[in-house]
Image 1 (cartoon, one colour):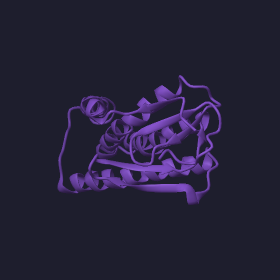
Image 2: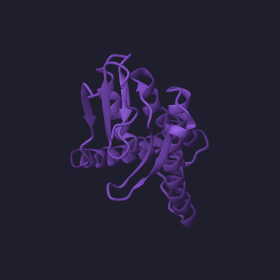
Image 3: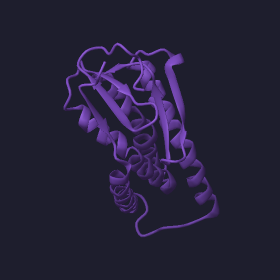
Image 4: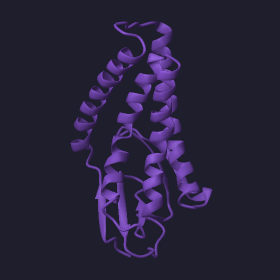
Length: 185
């Protein structure tokens, strides 16, 4: 069955925008942190830098795991249909399912990692006076840039549309009815 259309992230176009978005968020979150928590202080420490780097790697992995949790929780797909990995050539981590998911569920799948790996660390950072957590929240918010773009495009589709997540590219195949094949290959 042929998809009615395809939503594809063009990495060469989106990467510069995501980089600027990341820089803006880092500055905005740092300013907000200093305005609300520690006016006119900024400190570096080896422990803080290591915490940031380890936290960033861990939260990227957790971000993708929450996509998988979203597929099972909202998309009702079997665990056996899930795939997780890293595409070093494209410089992205990915989590996907081979099963079709309805649009209303796919939108939740796309945003679940933002709430758990960006929003919560940011709020905790402000609450615990942790500049590192606030900056991690900024980085992971920017890291969800592609998810936000896909979400915006899916909002234009019917809730009942069926989506197949491409297993090898940042691309979503949209179907008006349940697709006969279970893969976007």
